[in-house]
Length: 352
Image 1 (cartoon, rainbow, N blue to C red):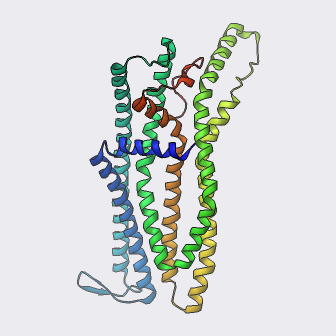
Image 2: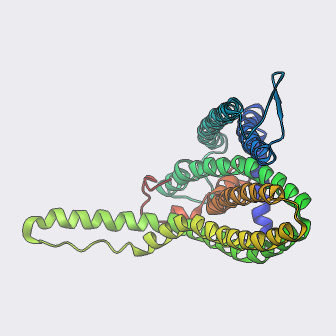
């Protein structure tokens, strides 16, 4: 997968999706980001209470002064406030995700309508002369590639919130302890080649799933016909030899696991470095544990959302080939000839 082709398809998909529903995209992303911000506010409230509980400094609340170590009223107020904030965060995130899911359906329906409109405008694809091949090629563009484009869209817009959150958390880490944070960034750069290789393999496997699914369907149908014809004469029927398709399919599903593995390895190094680095500085400087608590929270948000961002990038790489085929027809009028000449094409009933 060449970087120029990937950049071209990604740019086209971004324009075709994010600019097509600007208000809804902003609303859905804003709700998800707002839910994350409210969650951070709840965690911050708990950290501030823990800090005051440690020092027993008086807290002013509604004109009254409370001592954290002896006031149950303050404890109940903080607990209720944090719980309410987390509830609001959950509702905002649910609403945002539901809105984005509806946008994915709208975009898939638009992809179908656009292709039919282009078909009426351009007529039959000139690259293929056989009518059945034309139908198969266009069927793949509508039924499968259009649906995968909708998944690409979901990953594209879904990468915004974790990307922004990870960036904000990274700034917090830099402010808290920039030497340690730079060391962690260097570790992450060492992992980038492995992530890139995993994404490249994921895209290739996704393409193999489409290429091998038709022949697997033909083989399975032939096996069923043979079993029905033989009736009860054969007690054991050999399973269709679809290992190639299954290997590609399971490999595509495992691509996200590969990304998680790399990020988890980074997390293990980061936490070990945190305990040794920040903990040692805290002990020697006698500055208290508030700084290390802030760093821990920021590190958690950074790594968790970095993992979410990496998963979105992996999903986009998985369906790069399908999005590229769909774009080729919309922009240049090219149909997937390699798919059209296959003996059969199933209805895309595999896990989409």
